[in-house]
Image (tube, rainbow over all chains, first blue to last red; front, side, top):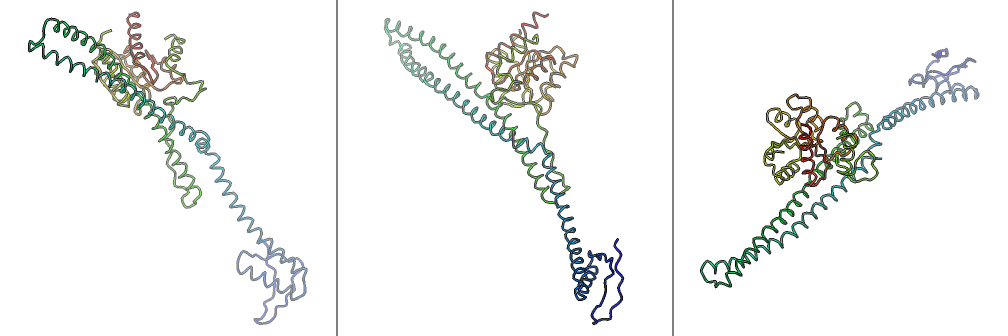
Length: 270
Length: 130
């Protein structure tokens, strides 16, 4: 603590005639009083013609002010550094931007492709089935008409033979084409499997959106000191499983299809 | 292989349970029940006489792998045949399921033919082991 320079009380109104002692130290300027004292000292030096002393005092004052500014800047810099360090340590954010968001776009593209594929498979099966049903119905209507004539006793022997043959053939046709329809309907059934896969993928993307939301909220809280201390919601832990593989090539730890699964299992003795 | 065997199908997606149930019906298996999670499936298995468990992996309450382990740990259920039908295709997981005692592993998307073959294979092996 610098000692205040002793000075004599000057009567009010009288010009101050003070001679600063040779070892003058800078008065405490953190208070208004201190500042006033320093200003009076400065004036005194100037009036006394002690420009060297006046300059020295001025330098001291400036330096004190500057150090106050530096202190404040240092404090702010520290705050900024800490905030950046916090962001830096947030691997999650890095993960999100570098990896998960691009992955999310891939996943959504996969959903689009899968739903399109399923729609096409279904439409194809339907397109191939409709003519079959129309054909069966048309022939059934025609034969019903002939059958009607048979039951009314309108058919002669040769016509009867022809109708019997036609009916026999028709029954064979129904059996065959029913089996075809069954197969087509099974294709439609299997095509609906998309919903399970797209559902799983979409759930993961929703989880990612939630993580992004949480991270953004945390950034906002970091930037506004008033909100510091209010903890952000912890994002849901990413699932340990991968979910449906969305067709990215070159993933060594993922098998490419049922054949590889079977190969892996038999290599283990199953 | 008894076509009347009691089968439990476990998957959190109802559409997938429907598909599998229809496929089983096509193969002649009409005695099928459903559960939407490992947590609901386990008591059903413990209280009912099931001959085959078909389960997904990814389920919110209890995952398929945990259900499998619970089944193998239960003396009453230890020898229940278990077939996993799942989108999980990581090598580590397949190995994990095999080590936990799964009898078959089908990866989605799958075909009706694959389901048929795997079920037949499971029971062929059980019969030849008996």
